Each structure stands twice: as structure tokens, then as C-alpha cells.
Amino acid sequence: MRVNGLHRWWPAAVAVVPLAFLAVFFVLPVGGMLARGLHPDGHWALGEAVAVFGRPRERRVVLFTLGIATLGTAVTTLLGLPVAYALYRLRIPGAGVLRALVATPFVLPTVVVGVAFRTLLVSSGPLGFLGLDGTWIAIALALVFFNLSVVVRTVGSAWAGLDARPQEAAAALGAGPVRVFATVTLPALAPTILSAVTIVFLFCATAFGVVLTMGGLRYSTIETEIYQQTTDVFDLRTAAVLSIAQFVVVILLLVVVERARAGVRHQSARAGVGQRRHPTRRDLPVLASTAAVVVFLVLPLASLVVRSLHADGGWSLENYRRLGTTGDGGALLVPVGDAIASSWRIAVDATLLSVVLGLAVAITVAYRPNGRSGGRRRRRLAVLDAVFMLPLGISAVTVGFGFIVTLNRPPLDLRDSQILIPIAQALVALPLVVRTVAPALAAIDDRQRQAAASLGAGRLQVVRTVDLPVVWRPLLAATGFAFAVSLGEFGATSFLARPAHPTLPVVIYQLIGHPGGDNFGMALAASVLLALMTAAVMAAVESLRVGSVGRF
Image (cartoon, rainbow, N blue to C red; front, side, top):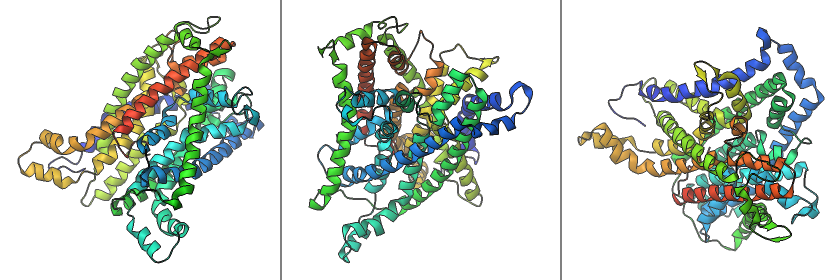
């Protein structure tokens, strides 16, 4: 974005507040957590830290994390590509509803995803005969379920804008559909696919709620190991070392993402306007695989809903009526209804915070400097963009515990303050807001602003007449996206929520951890309500038809 007459330093000025926020509520807590483990009692303990990786348990955790993330990413990509093609290149009935359905798992609380898969795979569930409950295959399936929308939305949006003429030319020269895809379509989509694959691997490797709910003590990833070492064993050194290993991997992956995104921008500059067409017989394999994926996405959710409507041996709404209580044996300190109210209040605060900060970051990273120093300044902005993506990959557990160990003394003694929860959730939602709004701002032709200014429009009038008509839909979509993500955030909130003021995901996890069929039934009913809330928000977001939503 370029505006005549603005000083060269205005992007940095706009970014000051978000950078200060990131420094205080991300860099400081993460740094404090690491220092607590690597520099205990005022001296460095690097040798002991390195020795952590020599332990059999930690080696097993690292290998399992890499293996499950690789498998989950491969399956997600293979299943997601046909769906992306079907939903973004073909004219099929209900495509909008299907896109919303595909997007919903990504904003579902990970605890809900874990509960839904367990109701499906337990011995009494519809697929219990497969014997997958409590296995690594079940965890991999849940990761695929959760991340499919990343591939579908990211690749699908790029596919929708792909110029069809090179493919038509190849087909006219005698190339079959497979050869056209391999020689024309796939190379054009390669940067976008690489970006999506990297992000999915990142999310699989840092999955928390799904692995904690489904893996128990048998299967542990780096993320859940950090949690268990911190809360159960209180071995901060091991937790810190694992956090550092995770941090290094995240940095490397973000570099790959940024390079891939540079390729995407290059492709976008050359792309035409893709035309959707009606399906033909040759599209039957794609449509069949899309239908199978839709069934795969619906099954866990349907199982969750059906099981929530069963109580005392028959169909009943009893599980929902019990949400007004504190559970069997006093499992909770407050009724679930109070937790729902807390979740909404916190999500509203977190959304406002993330949107305001995210808009400032988006304005900054969408700026396109020119002139002699333009290249150097663009590289700085790319680095700044990557910095604001860091909360996507850093353990939310690390951030949550970092809040407790660093923000506990003046001038920032916030350990007993509920404000830390919306701040933590805003950190999670911030990168998503930036990725939704920044592409829309960057796509505005600067000549429109110059024309408006030459006709006498002031800066505010230029923003109102040129920028606002383009950016209001992405901004509204980003608001809904951030709200849905905040409603379901569990990693950091599990550390920060007070027993008297829990959020809905925390209450669900507490109910699962307490024995008794009544408590488990309440957890199912609460999970359904939370899923319905996030699905409704995502349906509203989908109705805005903003292609950059969910693209990373």
C-alpha cells in the first residue's frame, strides 16, 4: 500500500503498538519460561539441558511428534487437494455450505474434536469394531479432521483464481487430464501447496488438546510433554528444552512458509480469473473422494450429537438439563451455563484486541515501498510479518505458563487478573486476522488512492472511499474468525482460567476428567453447544465469501 505524502517511517509508527504488545505478552513470557529452565538459580545449565534429549522418554516423544505430524500432513494433503478442486473449481450444489462444513473443524475446540472421535471409536461407538480407540491411528485421524480446511481453503482459493487457458491449450494438444494436472496445474499451485503443507505440519506438530484427550499417558507429543513436565512433574528444565526445540523448528518452518508465500504472490500477479464449470463424468473420482471426505467430517460430529441425546438408556435431553448443575459429585465449582457466559465475554474482549492490533499489522505489512531502498524495506516488512506469525507455532502452553512466571511482579503483576485470558487468546487469533486482512489491503491499486487525492479528497476521505469498500468484508470475516478461535482456545486458557471463572473448553476437559456417566454426558452436551456456536460463526464468515479467510 502506498500513499503519497506520507513519511517513510509511517509503517514503523503504525506497528509500534502491536510490537510493544508482542514484546510484553509474547517475547517476555516465552523468554521467562526458557530462562526459568536454562538459567536456574542464576547460573547456566546448558549441559543438563542438552542431556534431556538423551533420555529414552524424550527421544520417544520427539520421534512420535515428527512421525505423527508427517503422517497427518501427508494424509491431509492427499485428501484436501481433490476437495479444494471440487469446491472451488466446479459448480456443485451447496458448495458454500460444504465449504463452511470443511472450515468448521479448524475452529472447533481441540478438546471437542478429541471427545467427538472418542465417542465414535470407543467399543460402544459406531466404529468401535475397528479397535482404534486409544491408538496413534485415532490421533492421526483427528489431526487430519482438524487441519483439512487449511489445505482446502488455501489451495482452493489459489485454484479458483488460476488461469484456465494454459490447461485448455495443453488439452487441445492432446494431453490427458492426468498429464495436464502434472505438467501445468501442479507446478502453478506448487508454492501454495508447499505453504499449506508447511502450516499443516506446524499445526500437527503443536497439537495439544487432541493429543491430550486421545493419547493420555501412552502417546505424548512435544506439546503435551511440555504440559505434563510443567504441571505434573514440575521439571521446568525439560519443559524449557522441549520449548526451545519446538521454537527452532517453528522458525525454520516459518522461513519455508515465507518463501512459499513469495512464490504465491508471484503466481497471483500472473493469474487470471478462473471460471467454474459444471461437473462432467471425468470429475466423478474427484466428486467421490469429496463425498467420502464430507462423510469423514460429519461422522464424529454426528456421533457426538447422537450420544449427547442419550441418557439413562434412551433418548433424552437430560444431559442438556444437567448443564444447569455443577455435575455429579461436585465436578465443577460453577454450572456450565456460567462457563458459557464467561467464554462469550472473554471471546469478545479477545476479538476486539486481536482485530485492532491485527489491522495495524496488516496495514504495515501490506505497505509496498518503492525507490532505491524499496527492496531493503520490503525485506524488513517480510521479517516483521513473520514475527507476527510466531504465536501460531509456539506452544500455547509455554505462553500460558510464561504469563504466570513472568507477569507476577510490579509493574505487571497480573497473575490473579482475568485479563490475561483474552490477551492470550488475542495472541492466538492475531496471525489469523493479519492473514485475512493484509491480502485485501495489498490488492488495492494505489492509483485509485492517487486519483482520489488528485480530485481533492483528504486522507480520511481516501480511506473511506477507496480502502473501506474493499476491506470491510475481510475485516468482518477476520472478526468472526477470531471470535470462533477465541471461543475454542484451550492450551493457554487451561493454565490461566480460575476455577470459579472457567471457559467452556476448560469445563469440558474437567468433566471428562471426573468419573461418572452423568459428567461425561454433560461434557458431550457442552461440546455440542460449543460446536454449534463456532459452526454458526463460521457459517456467517463463509457467507462473506472472503477467499483469504483461513489462508496462511
